Image (cartoon, rainbow, N blue to C red):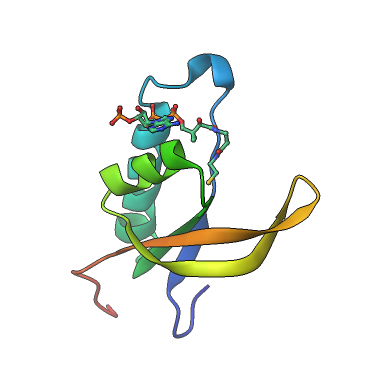
Length: 96
Ligand SMILES: CC(C)(COP(=O)(O)OP(=O)(O)OC[C@H]1O[C@@H](n2cnc3c(N)ncnc32)[C@H](O)[C@@H]1OP(=O)(O)O)[C@@H](O)C(=O)NCCC(=O)NCCS
């Protein structure tokens, strides 16, 4: 989203047999770099299910902070589910 947002939303998954090896952490780090350095965005948002501690850990390790709870936000596994919202800000953003 451009205009006043200058932001994007990020989603990710890693094959179960490859979990716990740091792939998601490194992939999220690289995408945030692309968003800020190559696309010039101000903010990257990510959403997790409330119980998805592994995904929340991935985000926290990349500087994402929780910004709230969104009720009935995403339809996952056939149900509208509450979601934890996270964001990381590009503190050196400029309009140039
Ligand atoms: C969530 C997911 C992306 C993590 O991928 P990954 O490559 O295993 O992640 P990493 O190895 O980079 O890091 C995982 C971290 O979470 C921690 N973690 C994983 N499961 C956890 C759990 N149930 N409770 C607490 N911590 C957990 C790991 O210990 C690790 O942290 P650490 O290195 O500090 O110990 C992967 O499990 C996945 O694809 N799940 C299914 C889809 C999904 O949930 N996608 C995210 C949607 S928001």
